[in-house]
Image (cartoon, rainbow, N blue to C red; front, side, top):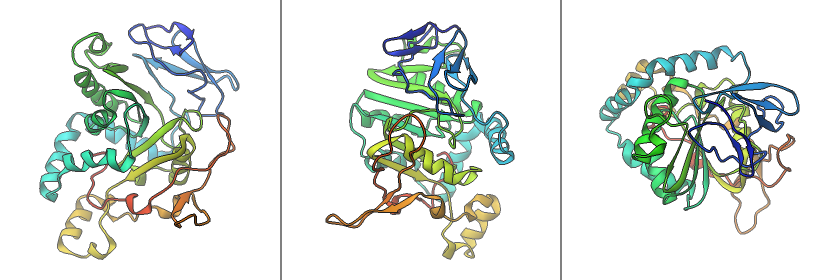
Length: 318
């Protein structure tokens, strides 16, 4: 695998795929400088940091030495990746939860429209990809990010199945593409830390994270980063598992928490960068601006619907 350098459409990072990033769209997670494509790496034009590109996937994980909590979950998900869908499927049966229906509701919550660009933070095994691809109508772009290489391998195989036969199936790794096209819909994969997103500000029309925010060591920073990379007016949907406090002592609640301590977590409202706007026919709260870094001006932030932050039924990454 080798890079072909810059094109008018951005950096082509793989001999198999034209990875169509606009110039300046990918940013150094350490300093937010512009990343320049080299033969097998991306190098920051500002601080000089280098990031490897393996099988067409840029490894933009930062910091180089992860926090203990983040490293623990990265390793756990790597180990669970191949059996994760089966595990969550069995859990859904026990909970009598319709995960497929939950996923089909995500595009409406995100107000997705054909031609838009969506970032999914913590793509996991790619379980949400089919519903999102259908909502985008074969047009637009999905950027799939995860900290776990193992989970991303599974998601790449699902992307290959979505793309169908053709060049997108011929990637290194036996049919697991670094990027794929479904019609004119593009899927790109990035290995990165959700608390240090390697993108310019105001890049995405929608941002999604399902199942994992309570595992982040820097929740407040993760929320601020998701806001930063979203365009003004974008929808952000964040969901994670949890048992409502009033059910903690019920027989079902006790069984859930005993089986998975993460169900005890409260919604992390304190970590959301709230800012209340003056009423203009309504008084909906909004996420506050998270500017101040390179890559875009400070601007009005995406509107935020607090009732949609949390789901008490979802298993992480489902």
